[in-house]
Length: 167
Image (spheres, rainbow, N blue to C red):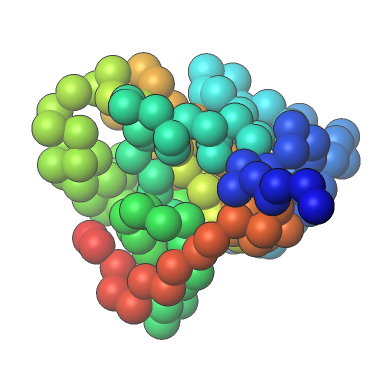
C-alpha cells in the first residue's frame, strides 16, 4: 500500500489558480468582497497551497493572517485572526492604523518578516485588501494565499477553529 503524504501535491486546489479576467488594483475594494479576484497582486507573492504548506515546514515560517469576519473562523494552524483587516474605506482609515500597530507587534518591527494573508477562497477580496494594506505600510515580504481556507481544506490539510480575533 502506498504511503500517504502529509503534503499536498503540487497542483491547484479549489480554483486557487482560476483566472476570471479580473484586473489587479492598487486601492482597497469597498464592499462586494465575495467576488472573483485577480490572479496577481502587484508587489506581493501569490502563494499556492503546496508552496505554503512547504514553507510552514521550514525554519523561517511566515506569519499567517486570517482576515475573515464572523463569530469564529476555521484557520490554518498557527494563524493569527484579524477579523475585518481587509475591510475599510482606504489607506488612511482606522483599519489601516490598527493594521500598522498589529503588524508591528507580530513582526517585532521587522518589515522584512514574511507575512501571508488569506481569507475564504479565490473569490474573497478581504485578503487581497489586507495584503495591499501591508504593502502600503512598507512590508517587503507580503504573500497572498489566494485559495484561502477552501483550498487548504480541499488539499486535505488540517484546520483549527479560532474563537476570538486577535486585534
